[in-house]
Length: 142
Ligand code: HNI
Image (tube, rainbow, N blue to C red; front, side):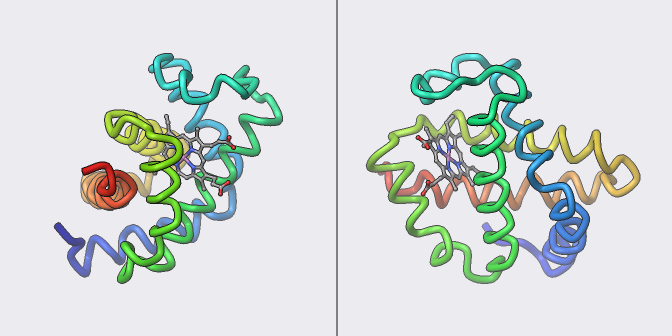
């Protein structure tokens, strides 16, 4: 599976806006994840996951920064995500289901913050992009 030219263009142009509020978007994404899908909290027993906690905000910022790196390397995703893939597969052993949930929460956050940009085409492009990123981060499980 790979992105078409126009899907790439949509993701890249929307990223310009996302990056101006990256940290807040990361925090909101994780808040949505942990409140809608509390089972995902089991990977973070060492974190204070209350809304707005410093750990939650710091982690949200890291996750969105990694998505930003992926956007920058959109033509070379496997390579760009190698380290993170090893971390999630070998060390963290996150069940791949959680990647779908996190991706969904990111999309909801983007839709809520950029309603005019979040057309059906943008929705589909981001969904495909995040599913490619997620499959790279989980492919080492097999
Ligand atoms: Ni994830 C650490 C990026 C999905 C649980 N994760 C990271 C780090 C980045 C990151 C960046 C920090 C790495 C470092 O410190 O070197 N994670 C991403 C991205 C996605 C993702 C881009 C999906 C698109 N991670 C998930 C999911 C879960 C998850 C779905 C579980 C629900 N991640 C973790 C945990 C850590 C982690 C746990 C370690 C946290 C810590 O600091 O102890």
